Length: 344
Image (tube, rainbow, N blue to C red; front, side, top):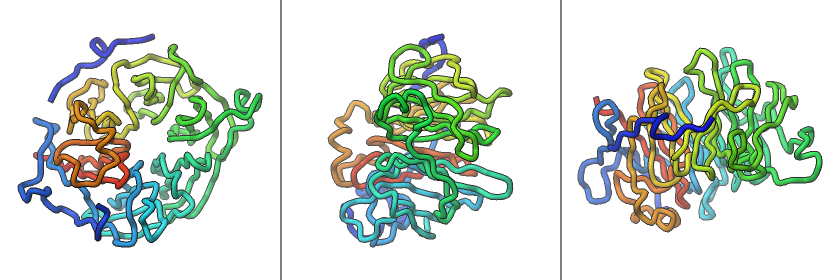
């Protein structure tokens, strides 16, 4: 069932030198920019976190927060970087804690954190090596899932596979979106045993074209899967066994999802220079940092002094922290991490 955004959603307008310093004002020396309004008003700190001088960001693709308030940034690593660590970890104040992940250089993409008993694990997608890897918070490998040779579409012929992100169901099942490959979603149990494949390239309901981001929506009594069907410019919902539910149209280039556990809001970074917030009824309640009218595709390859304070270039990943603040990371060649601190 396809639903236009007008009926399903309510849209409300609204250098690489030295370490990057936490909390600096913008380049003109003025106060930090503020975006949004009402209950969705935020003060923006661009280039958040004290990045060590020997690490230079590549494209910053993923961000999440652990139970201790530490922020994890997954990036592709810049060619100028002395160290090849793709995962950089900060405390909640932006102080550097640790880094690791040399094997993900050039392919670092999807990032998700998941509670399993009293322990938390990271799940990472590597678009270059074609892998989904589960690790401890220190980067120790626990589980790796590679090419889905058990899946019929992939078994028939060696079709392209390049996973972009993943989701985890209440029972531990893992859903891997082949966003840069053949646009299928492959489902496994928690041990990595293959279950099923659904999706596949196309425009019809149930088909996908670049399932770039994927999440399990726990806000409803019956959890469902939401897919950022990016090239089709829409979101799609599926049951946990891969059956299509409905389509939400008119999203320019959705990339990922993050949830505010306090109020049920969902943040969607959109590659077309904007960040959207949807409430628990999936109605758009805020557009943040919208610069979609600019030449953001050119800007993303430039140095930071070309970025406009209070505007996004190419948002790629986002998450809420425990206090309701938002972290946004962007698909820009020099990387950028922005903290949106909620204004009460």
